Image 1 (cartoon, one colour):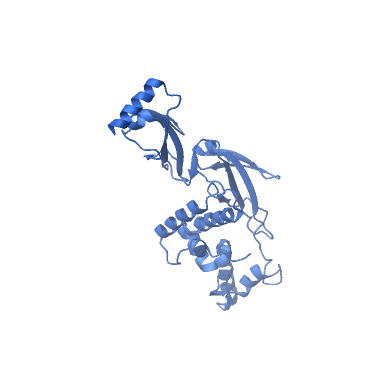
Image 2 (tube, rainbow, N blue to C red):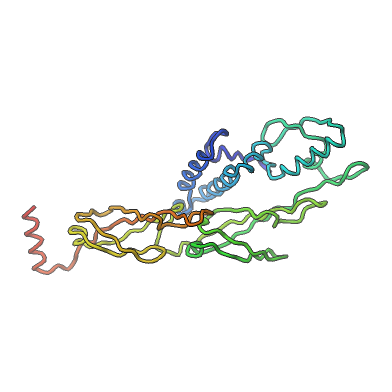
Length: 298
């Protein structure tokens, strides 16, 4: 497996704080979001890499393993066990091998044989254990489906599993379901299932991250004199007051009316409404006369 530098993907330093990681992820996720790059396969691939990098680096335990073992971080527990077994059987003698991340770590002969070559067995040594093959699957959902946590049954062929999908998952986002991949070899752990979501936007809103955007048409008279209007949200209509002399393209924010935030119960993004002023048509003679009088007053 090729080494992927998650720090480079998120454009941050290895000493970056959790706040730095969160900030970098949000910036890149907005930039590369599939909704903003609908026909750009490269951007979609980078978006998936950004999600993967954030999944690892935002978790302190996973990040620690990644920093030490590089591309093999998911095998960290097996590596540690291998080293402990070798130390106990060889009286503490160890050799030095190069890790996938480029640094040097003290790994035993057992460690090298376990992950570097074919399985073997012999007196005083046991057969090599290998993790099972990872599986990939795609799940298609409508945007209205992910406003709340969803229970879904996945058919993996040989078996079916029931999972809970947290509200607010994004289009192109990939999550890992540990232990639902292929069977391990020689008693090794099972592989993992990587589930990628395809979210169909079946709403009138444009989604960018956790925020939603929508244009709303207001008539000229409300724009000039002010008034009260109703606008649509994901959870129903709400009333808004239009200020007098509102210009077209004026934007208002409805806090907390956006998408649910992934794995943050009760938290939501915002909804941004952009006003578009509609000009009256088919004016009567009287109306035209009144507009003429207004123009003369100006």
